[in-house]
Image 1 (cartoon, rainbow, N blue to C red):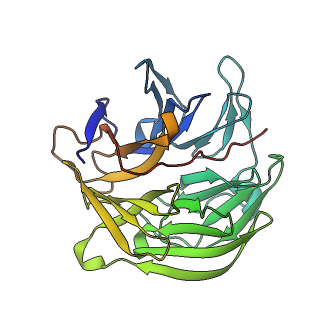
Image 2: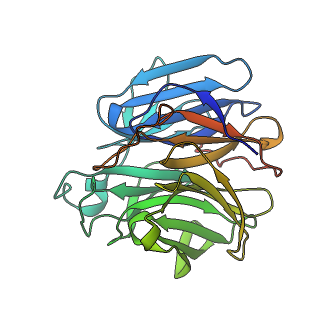
Image 3: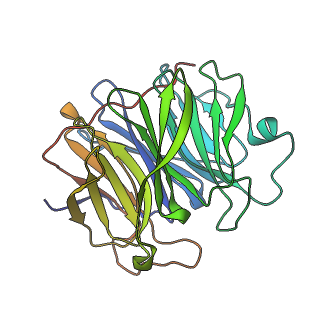
Length: 292
């Protein structure tokens, strides 16, 4: 199973692929530090690009066809041809502005329509790095976790009873009980060996409940069972894999974003920052959609 270069637009830090549209063929992803929202259709190859006013870390589909964009001081409810609407922010949740430069990082919509958003302090440490949640109506935000290193990949088990969350800087995958839009009972599911400097980044859960994790500086995707046993490894020609998402017909295509580098890291490979696809022998599942 070989990775295929699908989109050669080089991203400083490509992130957050998500499939949307009636056939899940329209893929959005972001180039965080270049303030770009990118798109491409798996079937038609039609592509697009939109510039944002500040760093943008995620794009989440909305039921009306728009997106929630994770701009650094947002997020924003975005619709093509309409004025963007500022949603509740970190300052609203925390009662004060960020003490140091910060931005959103990975994010996903939950089973009940709520938005879960991790944070990054641009390589610095801060007790403000953690996890926030916006209510399904889009009107309220709450801080859920603090004191993380770099809040990253997240997804849910097939039965919706377990929430998975990666802290990249801690080389750790956490799991939580999930019920009624809330998480509890935080526990350590996996700790990755830090001596290899292969950092767990973004992730997706497939239709068999297995976890696909992209590894920054690891040059690979790894698939783990629901019991956290390593089942498969797919190697890439580039070092910095950032995230992955299932897309297309029966979710048989895995879209994988990569980076040229960040915070002193740099990949000289000519394909660094490109977006890849692979065809695994397993189907994925649809992402949850924000209704407002």
